[in-house]
Length: 247
Ligand SMILES: NC(=O)c1ccc[n+]([C@@H]2O[C@H](COP(=O)([O-])OP(=O)(O)OC[C@H]3O[C@@H](n4cnc5c(N)ncnc54)[C@H](OP(=O)(O)O)[C@@H]3O)[C@@H](O)[C@H]2O)c1
Image (cartoon, rainbow, N blue to C red; front, top):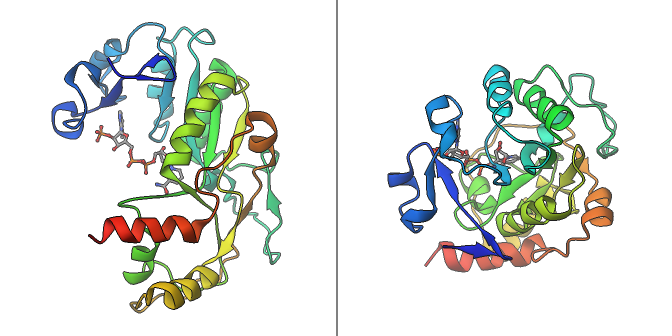
């Protein structure tokens, strides 16, 4: 049985045969939030890392009733888009966003996360853009998905996020939210210029984006979970991804 830091780890999928083919069969579980018949596949008292949007609310609430919270620890991956409220300031550079900044409760996934946080002691990770092998920001530039705008972006390497999930399961405070990013907001303009200089990235035609973006503060994550990033430097990480993704 697979272990990580002394834990037995299972992975779930709606279609484990296809999507979890790469891991040992005894570690695969079928689970679909939309299919209550699959909920019992999760071992009783297992701690959970919830890796997809916690929506729709009624299903989230029904599933939550099957949990033994707070004995079962629950980490939920949210998104920093929770802070994208219509009333967001147009100040530039944008002010730092910490966990006390307003969140948009009209968003269905934010409602699900807040339900789990306040009723089940879930630890909510408000996650920045995830990058890593197969999720290469330089490809987003190549394809024209992003351009050299003044918009701030916050990123976190997938491996750091995985480690932070485990750390939050172990020592996160139930009912708390933590912002998760590498702590260095950058403008797309800066990333774009470096991509051109260092990797000769050619770009497709891009749409103008005048939005300010956000600058996500990770002070709480650092102070309370004390995680040391494996990939603190975006450009060093991109160099590694370029060398592996392009072989
Ligand atoms: N990607 C980003 O840049 C980013 C940024 C901020 C936050 N986040 C959040 O971080 C989490 C992980 O992101 P990701 O990009 O890795 O997501 P992802 O690639 O979409 O993976 C989520 C997986 O969850 C499973 N899933 C989806 N709906 C489900 C349901 N109803 N019941 C059970 N399983 C379900 C799916 O696996 P199967 O198809 O195998 O069932 C899906 O592949 C998500 O909550 C996402 O919103 C992502």
